[in-house]
Image (tube, rainbow, N blue to C red; front, side, top):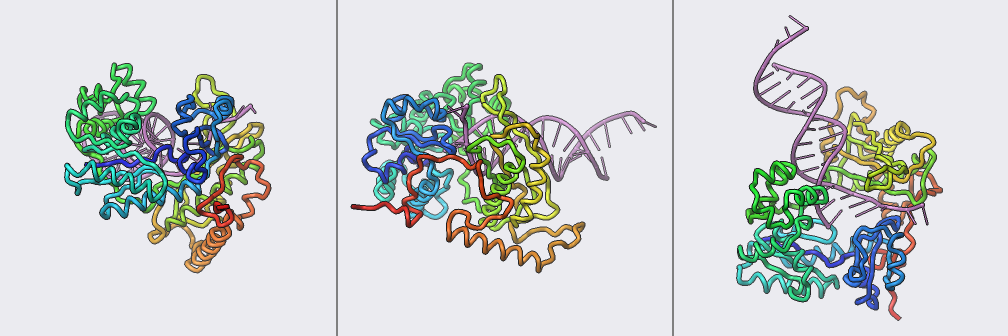
Length: 431
DNA sequence: TCTGGGGTCCTAGGACCC
DNA sequence: TCTGGGGTCCTAGGACCC
């Protein structure tokens, strides 16, 4: 059996941990730029605050209901996430925990006897809550997709389930599938749900009445076929070992204020590239592919989004690199090629792809030794020094000049809580 | 210049996840 | 006025090869 452990209203729970007076009060957390609502406590859900809804549209409702609002504080969430995952690792054998996102892990429960499953799961939940202060829900079933179904139901009926639900018989599985709207199924997003509704498929159970071939045809090929089998109880999405290196590294941001000049765009792109390059070096890798994207401010009729189409440009370096200066330079050329004078921009970003481990950077036969080993070593040493200083001093003390110093485009975060657990200056104080 | 089948590699873009 | 950020996987189609 496979379980999924999911933190309840994770970001809100993190905020409450250091503000216990908010325990049974409505709380929400906003996305970057204080744009939209990305986490809600149960009390906030109860007064009709929708997930993903824009902050400015909910502002009145939030005030009226006395909802406490936080900007996102990723230092805090990242640290508490780590504590929860570490707790799981100490409770389960090596290789049985797959961290799936900041607030979720799949756990392999094959080693637990069926009759002991429920008691084990409950004790796991209690220990996590006791050790970290974060409450979780756990769904258990024969496959990953079914464990997600179990988890959703456990959360929906907290009073009855106590946030733990185990689907260990065909009967329970079928009942659970019948209670699950098709759009709630893991792997069925907005587009597929719409399509399936047209075919008269409204619950997860309805989908299982079709054939694997049908799912293959209508739901994106092998992905759909796999989901179909998983819902039928045949496990085909294995536990993944911890991924060491990412295949793609992105740093993208909305601007705090709209940007109209090439100069500002260049600053932003240089800044984002510096961050992306840091992430790259942290995983001891180098990248060949560079993509720059900018998004103009422009109404598009009939579109869900309130911005113009994303403009992208990319290149491949002759040789993979992890040096900020080598990555910034081509990125700046790309952004210059994309920029159109007279337009207003609201977002920009960089994406590094074609990522290889640092140890296997391929030389290029046709590149005339610009990267003699001596020069390469110097570049690495410089990067290491920059990374170390920025890490120990916090907040980019050392920057490349191209990143600028004024940064009018920086994002807004007006209601961020202190970084209680990762900054000495921001430790919580007891009176 | 025309004709065929089978394969690889690459990129762009769509769908999804949290 | 104001709608997030960072990922994954897969498919289709073009270029190129024999």
